[in-house]
Amino acid sequence: MILGCWRSVWCSSLGLIGVSLLMIGCASNPVTGKTDFVMMSEDQEIALGRQYHQSVLKEFDVYENPELQSYVSRIGEALARDSHRKDLVFHFTLLDSPTVNAFALPGGYVYITRGIMSYMNSEAHLAGVLGHEIGHVTARHSVRQHSQATLAGILGSVITAQTGSQSVGDLSNLLGTAWIRGYGRKHELEADRLGAEYLALTGYDPEDMIGVIGILKSQEEFEAARAQEEGREARSYHGVFATHPDNDDRLKEVVRAADRFRTTDVTPPDREAFLKRLDGMTFGPGEAQGVFRGTQFYHKAMDFTLRFPDGWQVENRPDRLVAVSSDNNAAIQLGSQDLNRRESPREFLEDQFSDLQDGQVIDGSLPGYTGIARLNTPFGQRPSRVAAVFHEKRVFILLGAQRDGVLQKPFIDTVKSLRRLRDDEIALAAERRIQLARAKPGDTFAKLAEQTTLSNHAEDQLRLLNGMYPDGEPEPGQLIKLVK
Image (tube, rainbow, N blue to C red; front, side, top):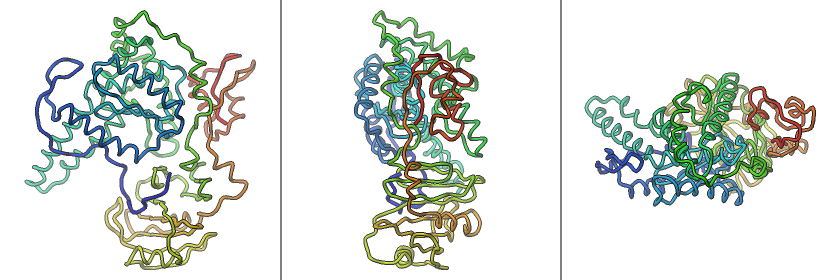
């Protein structure tokens, strides 16, 4: 969380797909060699990827570890050189995000998060994920998806114009999430097949494609259980398989088809060398974005903390924090900007919102003021709570809305909770990092969990990190990942 640009009030996450009318035509599919009905040339595809690459970099920070960035690029480029689009220059970026995700944009832009990388236990696992995403690019899945979105947009515009109904027109906006969430069973299997082929050609064992999907499936199952426990939507990568990959005959079939591409120049597995690259990598939220402990948020550099209502789902976006109630009927947003005038919180709010009503001083540890103003919210335009809290040379702006009426107590309680960090909270604001250790005789993940700073399901998380979920235990002398 960088906390800026607060005027992007209630903006939804950037839709990485825009509906634009492109020249309809035909192009050869580089994978099948057949002619596809598509809506853009390769030049247009590259231009689209370049454009949306800038949008991705506004939404996500790049992970500040040049050595790890270079390593990811080197593995990705080796796979891309053996792909069906050897002439395309691929760009690989390691994102500073705790989410378990990897995705690709048109034209060869591939992204992987440190969140997904933390669960890998070999270079072949990394190659498997990158190969899968390269497969999406070489098969032009995003181009096809964009073409479908364009057609849906055209159809929606026509129907809207004829009937006045927005329902069909809105469908086109739902297609944009495919670039980040997946393309459906058919295209995901094709990306797995291609990824396994690229692994074999580059000297990796294509069976490692099944292995890495198994690790991610375990993480997905754990995430689904936690999401149900916390009353929120589960977030997962590659979430199109109903069963574990070990029981997925179709997946095994498409991956093992890559055996014919195996080369004699084999990359020897070196688990420990890979793990040492992850030693010290940030795990979970990074310090620069701020750290959540439950619904309590801590930001060391900006010296503040606040608490959102219990049970609310909170998202730490690059420019703001957004909290949503469990029933999706209320939301609170926090942003900030530099304080540039010597004025009171009341004067600041009255200057920002000319229609401010029901103004009152916030009785908190920092000077603040709140009132009601008419805003564009996720629930439409309506009277909503706004507040300004001053902290040194920065002003925090909080916005609160609910589906019916004006959000009151949860909003006021959140605003009042905003304060400076105490000395005993500095450690809570520090980010967690992966640390390697040798398992000793008698070590179990239950015992090792007591040595970590993980607070929720620590034993399960350690098993996931080390590829031993749900009930594996470390062998004496084995190099394992802990979190400190």
